Image 1 (cartoon, helix red, strand yellow):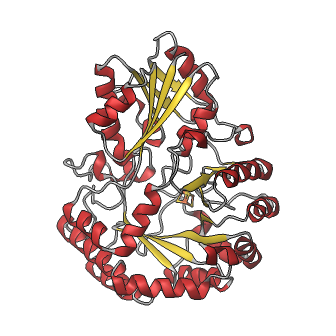
Image 2: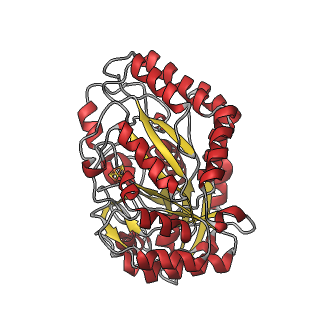
Image 3: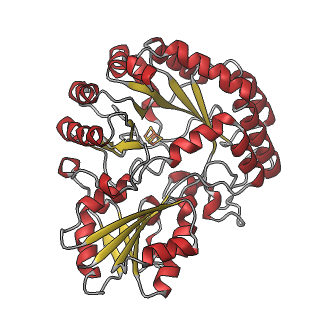
Length: 433
Ligand code: SF4
């Protein structure tokens, strides 16, 4: 029987030694990093469910490429190794793929980065999947079985209602984990910096009955599972959310998701999310100095954003407010103002990243000519500067960002937000977490 090894390169990657040290010492940062590292690779486990029965499969996740990892994969004598990686881990994916190919094993790489830059991927892998993996997977396997795999495999927009249950059984046993469920793919908006909204195809939603089935399967594995909705912008479509929320409520598991600030205008939706077990919603505040192209109706002044956060939390739903630092127009004054504002910012949590021009985005096209030549893909990790800012030097913005991270994730500010979170949250499910 042919064997396919599925390899996920997981975890957060930070190259800058100062930020690495901060990540180890600041409790707020460490907590977020650990939560992300625990998320299983939904894309690979989903294509695994679409693998024909005559193939055997193994799943490997690693936060670094090592000879041990190569040996562990090779031990299965795979006919094919499928690797998923984000931009920040794509160089490691290439190193792994190169090592496997030197041993005569065929490889394929997919995901957002691969979709944006398929020719680059083909310098390191036998094949690349562009777009949705589910619709390309059968052709990849058909070519790999007689050892004829090469070139580009174009996935068509997948109908999410045809999703099969992800192969959770392939995960290493024994660890209590966060599980991911996707209720929609893409986003109806198109923020300039966002790679997720359109690259894999148009915005699509999964029916509530399919979501219900996935939640039931997870609950059967772990009755105390915590769910992260792997959506780019839940509830951004026009469908009535009642059935989806009912599926989530019936599952009785705490869940996290991402929405845009417009949910603040729907108090009933926010209350229903709490009632269905939503433990926290991530809301993009984005840049305090620039309204990006493509933000459409979610764009708002900082004052309006702050009011939106307060209105969402008034309904008992804690908000993780996500700021992007370093947009054109950022100055020492704007960063001073932001730092002062964040001392009393009302959200239960804060996420702060540097503007990052990911491949395939309109932002990268706009910043072409200002990209720093010595920053390879591993620096595109949301925490490191990869372009020349418009009104600050590279050194100044880097240092100011590091100081902001220190201030925002300090013990005092982390504790202040934990208290805020306790005072906001109302769901009984969240209290058990
Ligand atoms: S709202 Fe969020 S998911 Fe949608 S395009 Fe903007 S950043 Fe991307």
